[in-house]
Length: 251
Image 1 (cartoon, rainbow, N blue to C red):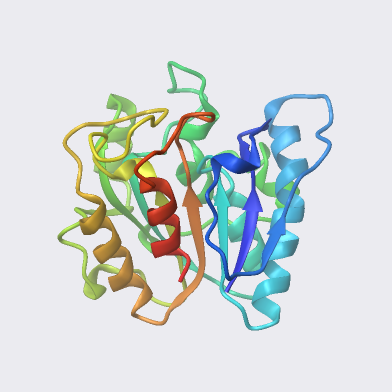
Image 2 (cartoon, helix red, strand yellow):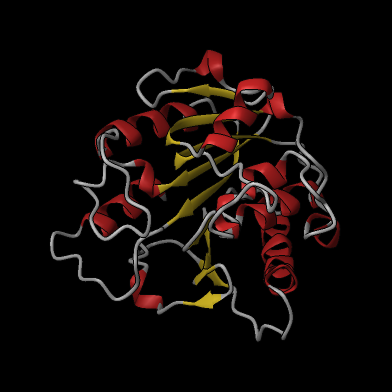
């Protein structure tokens, strides 16, 4: 297993030490001198090499784990799998829906849109640049998503995106074929994982999330893993919670 390390929150370069990567795995670090321009151009420039690294790993028989500071890097992960000839569905663990659009968002935060982009929203923003083909909605399983904005709830009520709780997840709910296992670690209850950028109370335990992720991994169908380390940079982790989570999810 190879770690593809993308130390960014969107187009903001983050300190490497904010990501306590486990020892014992080869690491490919992706950093870029990002061009001037809007956020989509900058992210496209960053995710093109992410896609190449993912494709290279898959073509050599490896299962890459992409570690970054947000969820949008999943666009590069999925594009890389497609470049390698892998037509994957996705299992998306997140406290949020990540199905906002530019037309519905009140914050303008593009990190709240990647799942919607994966299923075909406005490909001219970034998908066309990455060669990313849209994923059929029914090949996406959204796990938890306990904090939805009204436009997200309205979209999910009529879309074919499937949903379930962390503890309810079993193999029968998974999309068919190869899978991307995407985990935004803010799916874990905010009381157990401090200093998150967008904490949401009332979530599952870390143990419950790890057990559910293991059920997905145990199918043998996971082609790539995405880990979104969505905590603020520069915050201490005296109990080693972050390091323990990354170690458990990169085995």
